[in-house]
Amino acid sequence: MAKKVQAAVRFVAAAIAGGVLGAFIGLFSYANSVQADVHDGRFGAILCIGIVSGLIGGFFWARRGLKNEDAGDDPQVGISLLKKYHRSSVGGEDSEAGQYSIGDAYLKKLLGRR
Image 1: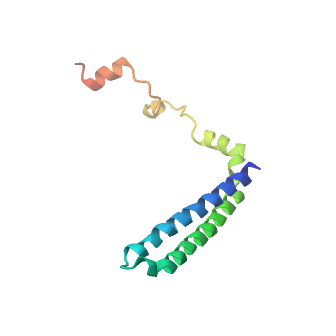
Image 2 (image 1 turned 60 degrees about the horizontal axis):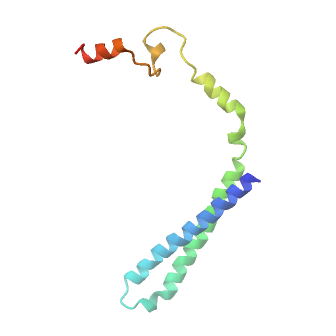
Image 3 (image 1 turned 90 degrees about the vertical axis):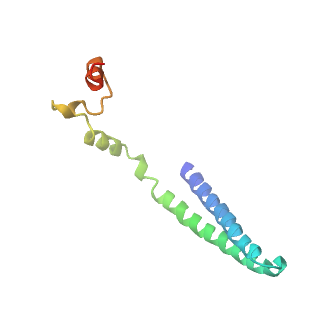
């Protein structure tokens, strides 16, 4: 149920964004004319194109979200990542990489014993 709500939110958001973008582009038809009332039809057409493109984009965005709903719910994905990025058990310089523990001796060595 939650995935369908997320898909609906994506669809509505894309439709609103398409309408706003269409209105923004349509306003340029008014800005570039001497008599603004002549371009009412052009503004309406651009606005409709923006809304329709937003609806189409929202449909594909929502469909993709519903299609990929099972990909993020697999617990084996997290386990395989943990196995891939486990800590190194081999001694040497790389064994302490990413540990973020800086001791006094290291700081003195780094600062040149000031």
